[in-house]
Length: 329
Image 1 (cartoon, rainbow, N blue to C red):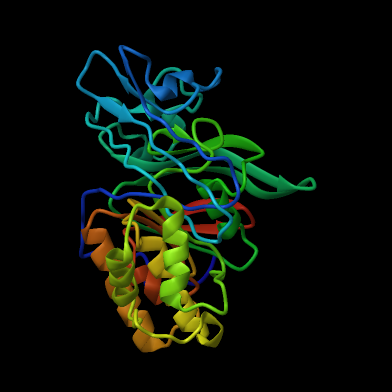
Image 2 (image 1 turned 180 degrees about the horizontal axis):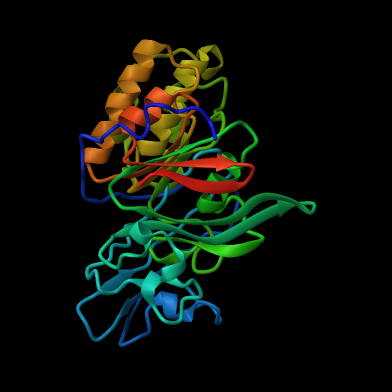
């Protein structure tokens, strides 16, 4: 267990609801199209069976609607997903469905509640590389509209877990659901997610604005106005002509965060987002995280700084040798 003495005494000052949009990810096939089917079974009822072809909206006898999303993928270190897939009725909880292979009673009490709105569910996930276990029975729900902190030493499995949630890696065993769609089965990559994993990569000879414009052109969802707004929001000058090769580590980190938020995604997966920032930059980015939470974003964040976790996070888990344990619910 790492030393994080202030975590249990910290209280979040902000609670929020949820919304968001869009994705960019690593090299994979595009998934587009939306069909509307009346009286079809919800997507989670098909778990363990042949996946449905294409995207769909499934509508049952009750007012709940589950909406599929378009996915465009590309080779990048950050992910800007597609469309929101909200659940309208709290009774339509796939994690409590009788066909789901995870018994809710095996979870911590807070995770098993049918009254919670779950953004991401990691269900008994294992991951191994060449027979070496990296993730060991990770079983955790992450609630909508909150900041969830994950702490742990280097090599403990935090980044591997984040890559599995994003679809960059597939679990060796178990499943991950984002907005009630199984990653790697219902969707290749989660819809509605922005990601920073490790050090963001950009074309070194281009400016920050040019880099983000190239990435945004792949989806054509936003224009220069939204890109410039995202760059300014992270404390960079959108008119700066300096190429990214001349950026400091902290400036690159800010640009990576701008890329993650520029298409207004609902969920954010941020692996060490404060790396390379000075104390003033850390303060600015903490304030930005709080603003994003107030907008309804669900944020998973890792950090080696206990002050980041204590100040920002509504829930805290620790990863130790591939095992995830709850520190603060």
